[in-house]
Length: 156
Image (cartoon, rainbow, N blue to C red; front, side, top):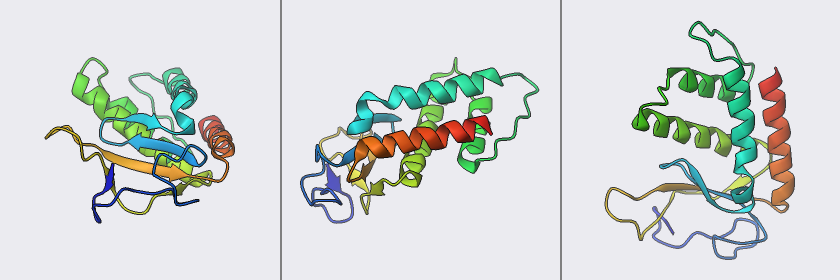
């Protein structure tokens, strides 16, 4: 992994250790392919997915006009409604959208993003990814706060 602007390996914004700092890495989000690669969220991202899926599925109808108070959730709802989950490309685009929202929710919950773009320098051509690296003193607390924010947004 490198900072695409400097060519240097990213470092933890909390302690300066390598980018995969086990104490502070909340999430390494692959925004290109829509998945969590590492960090405290790695084992828990399904909690976020399942809450979003349950809320959206409960309102899925051809004439659904649900309005969400939270702008990120409203944007994701619009993407969800427009997605044909039988179409692999459309489904993959939706997953990218979900991880963009997860990235923003983690930041709203107190995670500090790594400044600058991070990319995987070892990827094959056309398979490189853009990553968001998020850090915190207490990654578990940020994830708990993210779930609280998400629950409140999905109930509104």
